[in-house]
Amino acid sequence: MSQLVEYSVWNFENKLSLLQAELYYLNRRHAMAELKYQASITSAYNHRFFHEEAMARELYGIYLVENKMAVRGIPQLEMALDKYKKWGAVRKVDSLKEFIAMVHMSMEIHC
Image (cartoon, rainbow, N blue to C red; front, side, top):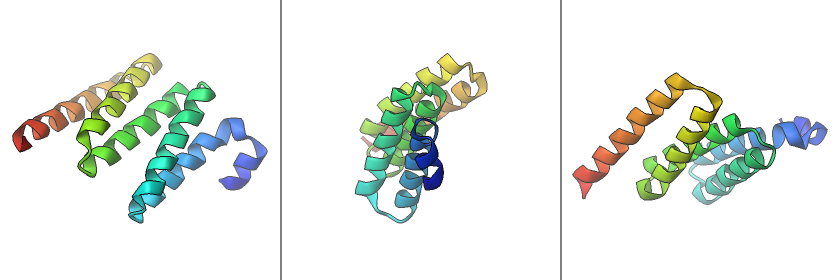
């Protein structure tokens, strides 16, 4: 993937950053994971790939929720929801709405 980024930063930078974020997460390198999620979101936003920004925000939001940072994760998930709506991904919107509702319920139970 890094070779593709060298060929076209515009098209591949956000994808590489997202893959790196997921790998850092799997390897419990949380500080690097957060940086790469944020880099992916920024790159997708700057290059106007709103569907890829949605995916990066969703995965970042899930990462935050799974690591007991739901207060920070919910806004990411809600921004992803808005981007998916803009893209017209109706089923994805419905699925993400259900997930967000579950996170809210979980937060209420644990408070």
